[in-house]
Structures are given as C-alpha cells and as structure tokens.
Image 1: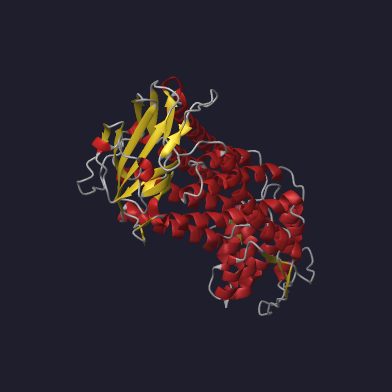
Image 2: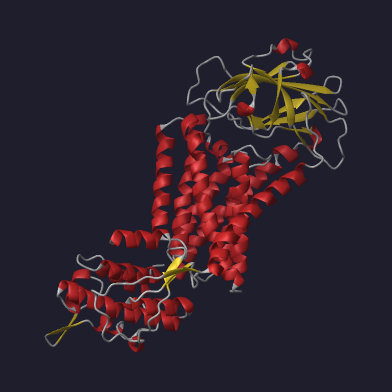
Amino acid sequence: MFTLFRLTDIVCGYYLSAIPYTNVVSTIVSPQPLTETMQLHLKINPYVFLVRGVLPIALLGFSVALVLLMNGIRGQGAQKAEQGVLDLRYWPSNVNDRLLAGEWGFYWEEYLPPESMVEVDVKNAPNFLSLPGVWSGLTHQGQPLPMQGRASLLLCILLPDNNTYVVKVPTLTNRYRLWVNGELRVNDPLEQPFSPHANSYGARLFSVQPINNEIVILFHLQNDRHRVGGIWERLRIAPIERQDSIVFWPKVQDAVVAFLLSVASLVLLVRTVNEQRKYYVLLAIFAALMSFRAGAVNERLLFSLLGIQDWGLQQALEHGTLFASLPFFAAYLGRRFPSYFPALLHWLTTSICGVLLALVFITPPSVYSHTVPIFQATALVYAFLWSGAVLDHVIKKERSAMVLLLGGMLFIVAGVNDILYASNSIDSTNLVQLGALGFILMSFFYKGDLVKRDVLVEERASHVLASVLSEYQRNSNEEHLKCLAAESLCFALTVWETVSGKNKIALAEESGLWRVTNDSGTLKTRTFDKYLKVDMLPKNPRYKLIAKTLRYIAGIEGVADEDVLWIERVADVYDR
C-alpha cells in the first residue's frame, strides 16, 4: 500500500500537492488518530494543465521551429553543389568562407582511381550524396545501403580565380583518404582492419592552387567504427588571405566558452561556501563537465592540448562527459527546486546515464553511439518539466522568474539544435555547451526557490498534515514555513511515541540529531523543545535538521503508510 502511495507521489510529484477540505488549528494539540483512513477525491485543475502541460509542449515546439528558422535564414542564399559541381565563381566581397555543401558524386563500394579524378564527369555519377549528411538514406541496386561500408565522394569546385585557397577538413568520424587536384593529401591505411586505437589527427588544413579556376576533391571514405557512414562534419573553403575565419576564430570561440564555463564552476564553488547552499556544488560539477565538452567537440582543442590522438579514447571522453553531465544537472534541479523535480526522477536519470556510461567503457563506438537518442529523450523530459515550472512563476509575475526562463530557453534551444544536428536534420554545430553557459549565468541572478502552489490534480485529503502543508504552499513565506516546522515535528513526535512506545529523549538519543542535557538529574531536550512551538523557534531555524528528523521517524518500522507519505512530503519542503 505504501509503495503505491509513494510511487504516485514521486512520479506525479510535478503535479500533485495537498488541497485539504478540513482545517487544522495552527498549533497541534491532539492530532487525529493514526489509524484514520485518508480519503482522496481527485479533480483536474485546468490552469495547471495549461501551464505545465500544454505550454511546455508548445515551448518545445517553438524551440524546434526557431532552430529550423535560424538554420534556414543562415543557409539562405548559400550556394550548394548540384550534381557534383559547386559553382563559387560569384564570391561576394563580404563573405569570408564557403561551405562545401550540396550534392557530391557518390560511388558505393568503389574507390575511384585518383589518376582519372580530374577527367571523370562527376555529373554522370551513379548517385549523389548531399553533404553534410550520411548515406543511410540512399539505395544501391534497389537495396538500402548498410550503415557500414566504403564509398568514393567527388566534388568539382568552380572558383572566380586561380589564387590560393585553404580547404578545412575537420575531424571526421569515418576513416578517409583525400586527393585534391590529383595530389594525395591524406593517406589513412583504409586497407588495414580498423583498430579502436587508431589515431585521429584533428582538423586538417590544405592550401590549394586551382587549375583553370577549378578544384577537384576526391574522398575514399570507409565506415567501420560508427553507427552511420558519411560526412556530417562541415567542410569549408576560404581564400588564403581570409583563412582566419575557418582557422583561428572557431578555436577562439571554443576556448572562450570552455574558459567561461571553468570560471563559472569556480565561482559556484565559492558561492557554495559563502551562501551555505550545497546544491551549487552540483551545478559547479555540471559546469566543469560542460567546460570539458566545449574543448572536446567542434575544434577538439582539449585533445590537441593534451596530445590525445587515440580516436577511440576521444569518442569515449566525448560521449562519457555528455552522459555524466545530466545526473549532476538533474540533482541540482531536484535539490534547489524539489517541488517540481521529484527525487525518484533523479535516481532514474542517474541509473539511465550510469548504464550509458557503462556501455561507453565496455562496447565499441559503433555500439554506444546508438544510445545518444536515449540520453536526448531523458534530457527532453527535464526540458518539459523546467518549462512548466518557470512558466508558472513567470505568469504570476514573480521577481527574476523571467531571467530564469531566458536562461532555460537558451539551454533548451541549444539542446534542440544539437539533437537536430546529430540526426543530420540541420547544418549546424554543437551548441549545448554554449546554452549551458547561458543557463548558468542566468541562474546567478535568481536567488529564490521555485515553489509549487497550484496543482494539476487536487487531492482533498483528511490527513492532519494536509492543511498546514497546503497553507504553506499557498503562502510560501517565513511565517508559514516556521508554522509548518513546528506542527510537522509535533505530529512526527506523536507518531514516534505511538509506534515505538518511547519518549522524545529516546528519539534524540537514538537519532543522534538533537542534544540531550542533564539538568539536576533530569534529562531534557531544550533545543528540540523549542522547535515544537512556533513562538519559540530560533530566528534562523535549522531546516535541514527538521528534514532529517522527519525522515528518521518516517523510516522506522510500523509507521502507517499514509503518515509516511505526508511526513515525507513535508520533509521535501525543508530538504533543499
């Protein structure tokens, strides 16, 4: 019976709270009998259904639309290859570099001889692959292509002059050999069986002199180490005098984001000490992991700095950092905003990410790279809950809630961008670390705690703690918080005495939470006694101590399921 009550309370904790129909005096003198059956009558709250159900879905939909719109605007007017030919003869003076995107000549299970690459009419290629992209959607001889295999990719670039250009090939997931105008530039040993410890040399830059205003690029591509084959990374070309746009500034951007996240992590640790709020430690660890990720993706500065060339290790660190970050972020939300993020959700998230991390260490990249959608789905659950929680407070015009919403939106939009980018739906790059930075910075300006006041399912309950808990949820001020503390401790003490047959002296001694003094041969709990009366509570009560006491009593054997449920609910209020 308890399991059913507790699971309902935790899983639906985002929506559930107590709305009683009985009133309880402000100071408990004689609580209701413990054997009283709790009666529940449920009804839907349309306001909460709208704010925490409909609007978050609409907000996620808006984020997807915004990312697609921004991607469309950025790509508007961009020249793309058609049938293997990219016409860049018109190069505007205000454009520093161009993306080698569009249709590349695609030759499945065939390595074109480099000697004839210039003479081959790429327009007559048997198939075309749109880059950035993967070949999993193509067919060969009426059959869909497998995820792993080999192919040749050919592109002819028409340029406005014969001046020197720089071609940038980022770190590619698939193995490759590369020829430019018939000259071998990259010679990876594709014939050798793949080793998980094969080297990855990072982004490569090639200066190229066009021949008759043309550059012909040939890739021999082989996928034997990832879930999909192709080139979804962004290949770029720029005049040599403007090469900073593809060589220098992308590195600066990644370095700045990584540095700011590192600084934010240190500031959060300092803030933890100064404000005595331990949940900032969790956010600091999350910021540190995001800083690591900022250096592990895109330009992969961290791997160059540390001299890590092992491709398998790079992939493990990149995925492992991502999977490890979510549990700390989830725990932070749960510790700071427990009304909206139930504890069971964090344990479930930790379990899921723990399994994903285990797969990173015991399976090859071709296996664990398939688990990314599971991680993304888990993250979207938090995006949904977060949107509903903050929107609830924005609508009520609570101070700083709009700042918190803006930070959350930056993070959500960046996350949606990465999901669409990973599925090859848009031409973009990894931005989640930038969104995390925005969320953390905005969180600095919000010093309150999101407290849930309205609920989707109204529970009309007759339990003795329902009234005071509901009163606090409607008026979350210090006065009601102290009233809730005194009344919940009085009730919990009565439960202890009834179930254990012992007094408060035994409770203090056995729990080790309260000090027992000897006053002329009489044992007393002076501090604990003060917490049992509202007018005697200290100016700054130790709320963590209250939560520990409530949970200790709820955990003893013999306490009724209903009492455990309500005592735990009150403890959740103070355990943040």
